[in-house]
Image (cartoon, rainbow, N blue to C red; front, side, top):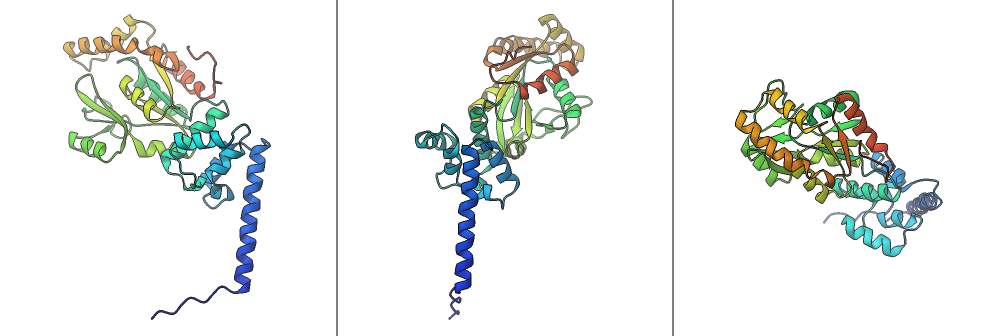
Length: 303
């Protein structure tokens, strides 16, 4: 028979009691700072996730939400239901998607723009790729998601930089494994999708993330992450859109006609988006997109 562990000594019990008292006092101080607005709940969760052994990390989500001025027990219960978070969960123990949703909820309470997740969409040939590439190069604080696609690379495109070029079998595997935040068949031909893990990890760490996807993808992301901020990229004119599509020379004449028909449908959906930016010049459009992260809610976001 194995020996029973020695019972805790008086010294051990005293140390445990002191540690418990310190934990309660530290958590109480955090809640008091949130209640008096000395600290924001967003600051608390940021510290909790950056420092897993901090007192912020041990705070229950119910305690944190209940400390926010104006948030009573009923609102806390509703919030937990909406966020699919157990009342027993501690801030540091939340999963990636729960962290994203909680940050979105807290950002809305503070009147901030979304959850640092911005979705850029627009019609074919409008220049989404050029704008996202400019942001990737000149705004390092923004993580530009790299989509997966089953189409072949165009001249100059690099695997892992412009897209993750994968086979149909690999795309199927990612769908089955739940590794895609959204996916769709675009232009009735190839499939495109957004890898989920790097997005959720970056958002949970408080990083700004931009997705460059098509119209249906943007709609899908909004269903999964309602706090996402959707931006529609417009051409200066229809004639300019046609010129850009024909000028890039990457599609056959038949495919160009099909893509332009799709573009008309996509342009008609622009009012579904939170903001619109005209891509007349790439650097200017990129700057306006990045500025939307700091625009106050309710500001005129059509440029």
